[in-house]
Length: 346
DNA sequence: AGACAGCCAAGGGTCAGCTG
DNA sequence: CAGCTGACCCTTGGCTGTCT
Image 1 (cartoon, rainbow, N blue to C red):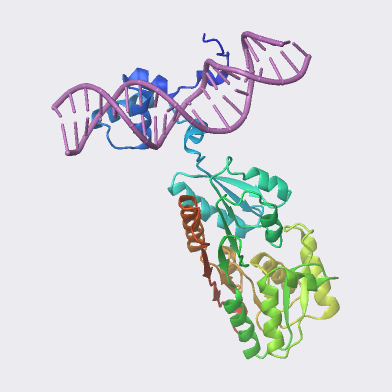
Image 2 (image 1 turned 60 degrees about the vertical axis):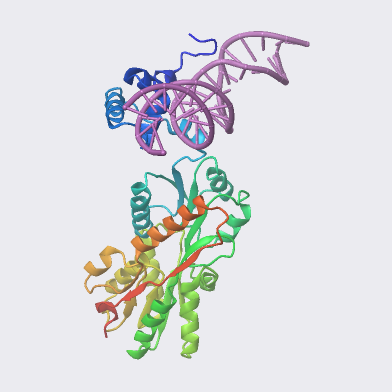
């Protein structure tokens, strides 16, 4: 045993040196084969791969990271995956990363911001895609000390400090509200994340509620914001009960625009429980166009984001930033489309 | 000249062994 | 006992040498 060698389980792992010895080449040649570099004869390559396979050798990513400074890991900051929208987003991102041999590390936005920043320090991951953190992005950017860390945001907001893909819901939302107005709807309300006591707080969140407000004011209509309390679990019947209470107490608007599809589904359930007919009495539209929207009767209208395109673009931006840290800031705007289904057809 | 393969150093964290 | 030193982990990029 060498002077500092320990009886450590790590030492039992098959290394590049073991494979090299068994294959009768040097570790350098094994490394070249594993990386797919040129200047290795087909005969040597075949032998190294065969021996490596027989010995169950796998590349030690920690050691590789030591040399290259690249871990092959991309951090993705997201909301929890019990939100179908984020589950779908992560699915598409994972397809993109896996196709390039990268591994995804999921971090959730309910972690402390300092903890998120710590988890994504440059030595731990090669880059970050931020797809959550609604309302906390500016604070996150302030706390990020390592600005050399490649980072791309997928967000309805735009930034001057980082690369981003902006998802602009305004045109589709405007189209939905115009459809309701044209159909003669008098009382169009917005259902978002917030509390019933302080619904106007949701206007500070991002573009969707403020687009609704702007369109309503432009049309000379009254703004009506209905808040769904985010502290109530998404699968809790209490959300539906709260909405029913609201509609029973205040009467029901004849047009409802929802922050996202899950809320639209809660609203749909509350309305049908109360005996309202959609769209005859209430026109309803959601946002994100999750798969279940078209299987409900009547099929629910929604605003569809081209998720594959968004994820491909985010990954492209991140790769470009990793390759060229001094690149000018990159940004792109994606405009989702309104899917008009029966719930919006008067 | 080009293909192929070996040598060497370096990278950051850990920990055994040495020194005061 | 605390603090310091340096071997070790594993892989790879750059350079160099050998062979056809």
